[in-house]
Image (cartoon, rainbow, N blue to C red; front, side):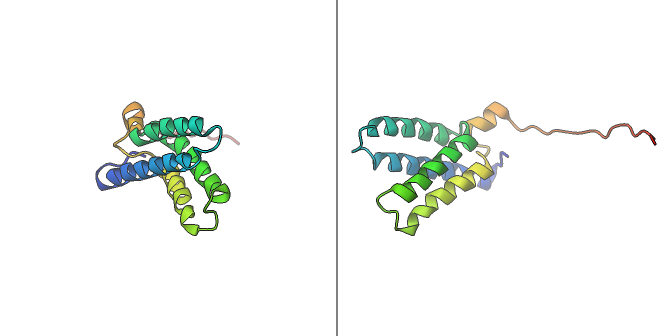
Length: 122
């Protein structure tokens, strides 16, 4: 869940790219009445995502926002807008990496399940 080294750095870069796309998508909707509120929420979620706080949940939100931008946005006919959806989904499935606040808060835990006592029942 929290890989170190090269994979951890790759997850850090993936978190930063998903956070940047989330802010850019929100900034493209500033002309609507709720645009500033949308941008403020996206900036808050992006900062949290960038530092690695609640990464799986915020990645799902970023994935939904990217999918909404793909379907409803101005460039919905361009397939390049599929990439942020795939990136956010990959981040949600992979987790935050070792260089995140989630790794500091939750740490590496190993669950050891000991085998139970076998009983001979008929």
